[in-house]
Length: 306
Image 1: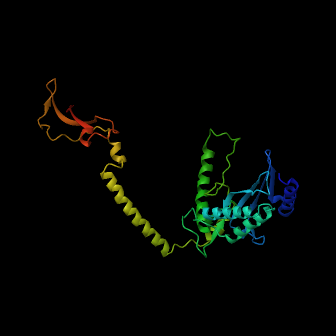
Image 2: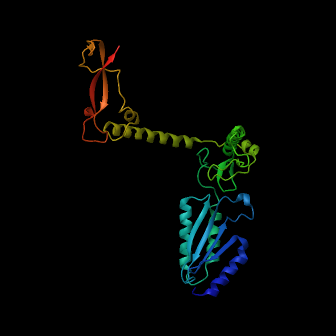
Image 3: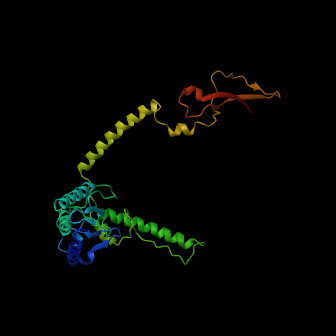
C-alpha cells in the first residue's frame, strides 16, 4: 500500500470504536476489506430501528490515494432509490477526500442517512397495502415489516397447516423416526423462523383501507378494461393463441355433419345401413402461417354402424 502503516493505524482506530461490529480482512492480492452492519441512531432503542444494511469498503494497494470501492449488502427496509442515492453519496464523499483517511467519515455518514430514513419502506406482503401513519405494524428479527393484525392472521393459518403436517408425519409408517423434521412458522418473505406473541398480534387493530385505496382500485379497473380490448383485437387478428381453441385442434368431432351430406342412410359392403358422421382431421402443422384458416381441416365421412 501507499502508506501501509497509516492504513493499519486507521483500521486499529476503527476497531477500537466499533469493536466486534467491524470485520476486517486482508486480501491475498493486496489491500483490505472493511465491513460492518449499520443501524440508525436510536439511543440504544433496538425496537425503534426499522432499517439496516451492511456497508463494505474495499481498499486497494493505493489507498488513501485512491478512493475505496463502496458496496451495500443485505439492506432491510430501504427502497432501491434510497440505496442507490446512499451509495452515490458515499462514493462522492470518498472521492472528495482522496489522500486522507476517510473510512470513519464514510461509516458515520451512512449511519446519519440511515437515521434520516428510519421508516419502513414498501407494502405489507400479506395484505399488499402500504403502511400509513398511525397503523400498528411489526418488525421481525429478520427486518421485514407487516401489519401486526395481518401477521397474526398469517401465523394462525400457518399453525393450522403445521398441525396438519404433524398429523401426516405421525400417520406415515414409512418415515424414518430418527430424522425429525423441524416444523416452525417462518417469515413469509425470507422463510426465517419467527418468534411472536400471537395474542398481541391478533388484538392489534386491522389496517383500514381508505378512499384513496378505492381510487387506486378504480384506476386499475380502467386499465384492465383497456387491456382487455387490446387483447380482443389481437385475438381477432390472430396475434394471440386461444388456449381453449388450440386444445381442440386435434379432437375428432362426430356430432356435426357437413351441409352437403345426404340424409339418406348409406350402405356398407355387407349391405347394412349406416349413418354418415364427419371426422375433422388436421391436414397441416399449426405453425404454417401461409395456410388459410379453412385449409387446416379436411372433412372425411366415415360410416358409423347403428
